[in-house]
Amino acid sequence: MPVHAEHLTVPAKPVQVRSLQVTDASFSWTDSDKAEARASTHQVLFTADSSSADGAKYIICILREDPGTPPSRPFRLDLLQTDEIPAELRNGHVISGMPPHLQPRPDNKVDVIVSTKSGTGRAQSFWQTVLQPLLQIASCQTPPEQYGLVVTQDAQSVRQYAKVIGDSPVARTIILLSGDGGVVDLLNGHERAPSAPLPLIALLPLGTGNALFHSLHKPCLNDTSTTGPTPLVLALRTLFLGVAANLPVFQATFTPGSQIVTYASPSPIDNSQASQLPHRQQVSSLYGAIVASHGFHASIVYESDTPSHRVHGAKRFGMVAQELLGLSHAYKARLDVRPPGPASLGELERDAHETHGYILVSMVSNLERKFTISPASKPLDGKLHLVHFGAVSGHRAMEVMMKAYDGGKHVGVKWDDGERVRYEEVGEVRVASDEDDERWRVFCVDGTIVQVERGGGMSVTRADRELLQVLVDERIRRP
Image (tube, rainbow, N blue to C red; front, side, top):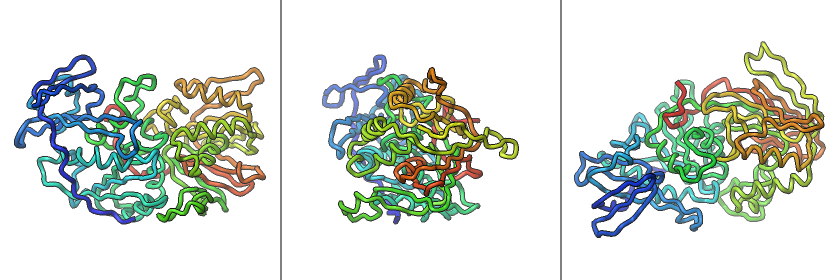
């Protein structure tokens, strides 16, 4: 995938503020035309200190989001120019120039990936309306530099990009305007030379579930409140004020004959008839940073990936889940689990179930902002946890899912007949499918679907090497 050079454009002229007042979690201002306006302090991204430049000292950057507007205009960036800012608006969110990881230099490349098909298709608008102006504002004291820009054309764009930059000897920051699929594509398309520095990714959650972002920012998000900063506000604060940390990664290994299955067209040419048919690619292993699964979760992802379902955004998962709950399919499979610790000290133990409903290995806490699949998982801890239950009724499966939305309370669920939700830290999980129908022989790795042959399966362990760094809020970085 070619990386185009992109010069930053001049942003909209900031509004000169005459007066500014803060009350509780909101603030109001009057501009030079004596017009009044109001915003929440939770909408403030940061304040750029431009005291060495001409004009006013500060530019307050505010993001307003309206998901009800057309995809081409869901965002509004307000820029307020002022000589003074109240202490309530500082809160550590003041920048003086561009942070080093966002400075394009000969020894540090900065690329922006705009995933046009992620989520509901808002990434392009976000780049043009919000991110590009913010980068220009932050670099106001230096000449505009060139950023690498990748606007995805098809399902292979990010992997092609990853191959192009794989052997680069210089540091690189990748600003990812996508969902979780962009991360897994970087992990599996990227072939880094041993001496090359780890690429640093910045997550701007514009996908459907955004599991990795929500899990990394869980200490900064209030799952039960709608009054705090939105995920995109937090993401932009992390982009400009965050710190780098190694991203924990697992490896899923598949038996011979396994294939990646996708409905996303591999060609930029739109062929409606072809896009309704699955595309297949041989695979032996995949790296992931979120989850690997078999059973109910994998089937939801697999069967909601068709073009007719994707137009519904996150709602597609619920639509397909209802259909699958009605079927209550019992997945014939063998499940073997090894406890955490050195592989030489722990043996694989066979789970007693011959049929299963849900098998999921997670490296993160959340699959969605309010869906806590692994409550014991902490940001960057690198631990794998298994969530499992047998072939239960649709009613019981729904009960488990609803409790996961209630702060992860599903991990203590037990029923009178002895069936329960199994939840524990693990070192390795192996699953082999005994299904005759290929529809049920599917596995999921961070949203990528792999179909195996009868008797085939997947093994999941912590990866033995680092592949990426990720920007995180300074409050959650481990020592």
